Amino acid sequence: MGLNIVVLVKPVPDPKEPPKFKPDGTLDRLAMKLVMNPYDKYAVEAALQLREALGGTIVGVSMAPQHAVDALREALAMGVDEFLLLSDKRLAGSDTLATSYALSMALRKLWSRLGRVDLILCGMESSDSNTAHIGPQVAGWLELPSVSYVDKVLEVGEGYVKVKKLIEGGFVVLKVKLPAVLTIAGTSYVPRIPTLRDVLLARRKKVTVWSVDDAGIDPSKVGVLNSPTRVIRMWAAEIKRKGKIIAEADPDKLVDLFLEELKKDGITLR
Image: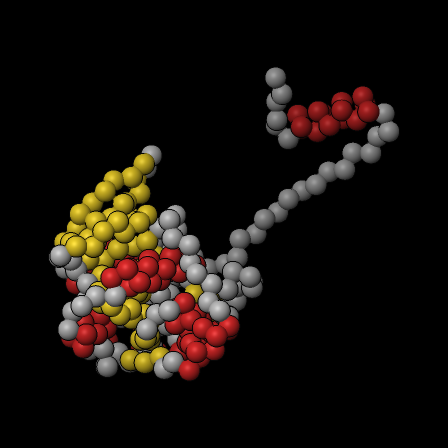
């Protein structure tokens, strides 16, 4: 029968462009170019390799503004079969707990449509917030076992998955009951690069869009006003470096002057 795999994908601000902020200090995602979260590419690659080995279907799921569709099509170009975008103004400003709740409700409805879901994969974290919350929280809402920082899916058997999990100083091998949620580390999977043909075909694929109502989400549990935590302000880090130029033709005097400047800055040489 093959596996039914869901991959959670997040569009993030393009790191090649400077961030843009709203007057309240929060990120203005509508004004920024969005790209597929780099960590999620490892999850997509893991799903693709599982499908190639065992057969099945891969469905991508994301929660984002509708203008993120172009970024999400990269997953379709890589080989994901279909994509579901959860998009609604009422979701704006949701923290990770509210986001994972919304995603879990969409997954429940998708699960009902597919008949079953064997694995839910996502990147170990997102490049814009690096919280690593979503995978474990989704597992919590769905009451499923989860494993974070998975280096490699070693085996999928009847009712179980065996994975190699990274830990400090090494790794452990775990056998987990299916269905399960796995967050994939960027260590053993090398994301494939779509061909031009893949990119063109992905543009023709339909991305299904669900609202809060479509997914059966309780509006009182999502959005900036209903999230337990709220971003007050964000800003670009400022790096200020002071340079000193010492002009001296005599190399010996130059070294002496250099050492004197170090002492003034509180640096002691032994």
